[in-house]
Length: 263
Ligand SMILES: Cc1cc2nc3c(=O)[nH]c(=O)nc-3n(C[C@H](O)[C@H](O)[C@H](O)COP(=O)(O)OP(=O)(O)OC[C@H]3O[C@@H](n4cnc5c(N)ncnc54)[C@H](O)[C@@H]3O)c2cc1C
Image 1 (cartoon, protein in one colour):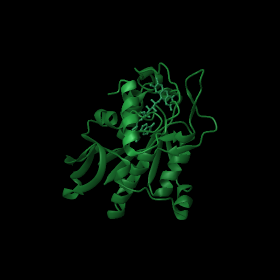
Image 2 (cartoon, protein in one colour; image 1 turned 180 degrees about the vertical axis):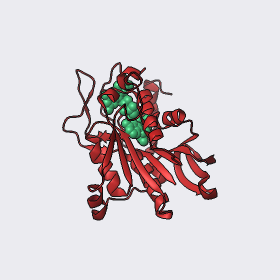
Image 3 (cartoon, protein in one colour; image 1 turned 30 degrees about the vertical axis):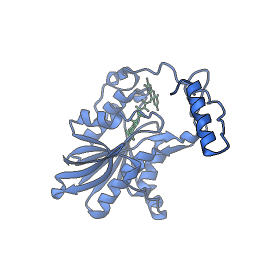
Image 4 (cartoon, protein in one colour; image 1 turned 120 degrees about the vertical axis):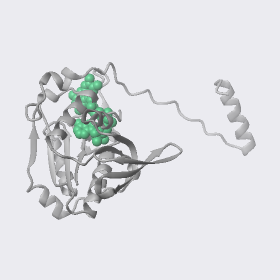
């Protein structure tokens, strides 16, 4: 089985700040990490490889040259191969253009049985890229996957899809694309041997020509959405602590809610 995992390098959002004038993320000096849901997607692929040693796990990302560090981390966790789609022509991509480029990269990988992605990236947060890649590859997709069982000698998968108040069990034909949620598993740590091996491996870098994309079809040129404005919402006012007996606090709470016309 050949599995492609879409991974994205994201700023560690606990430390992200927004430039108040430009309205853009201040990325300088902010540490980058492997997007958390993508670590779950990779772990799921590695668990399938643990069960069947013939399974190949390939990680692929679109990003700047420094995304190589994240790809080495994925190799150190146990991925077999890593691909970086990097080109000035890919810059300024919205989700539409991002998925075009990633899908072109996956097509170039040849026969793939399963594509895994995270549910969403913690910086862009749209959760659009996984389903869009599936659409561009003509693959069926299940989102919010919290369990994967491969059946019928790799022809089908039975997946558990997380809902707000329960779950669905879905049987899906392979090849397909699944998006992972954190409930899927606990990502493994890199091992010392894995880290040493990761630095012995080559990371393949592909530009627009390598994946047969015209510059007009990628990056900003092919991005129909534009960020109009981004801002940090003003902090909420200080909360009010109620005290007294439960009855007194409940009565005060009801008064406050009435004052605000919430009830
Ligand atoms: C007009 C515009 C310009 C933009 N310009 C830039 C820019 O210059 N630089 C920039 O960094 N961002 C830019 N963005 C943001 C960029 O579009 C998104 O970060 C990107 O398309 C992914 O969307 P998302 O973060 O919402 O991912 P989601 O859809 O939330 O991600 C879901 C999953 O898809 C996969 N995935 C997402 N992105 C990638 C990727 N790059 N490689 C591999 N797998 C991936 C991962 O598995 C991820 O968990 C721009 C957005 C807009 C609208």
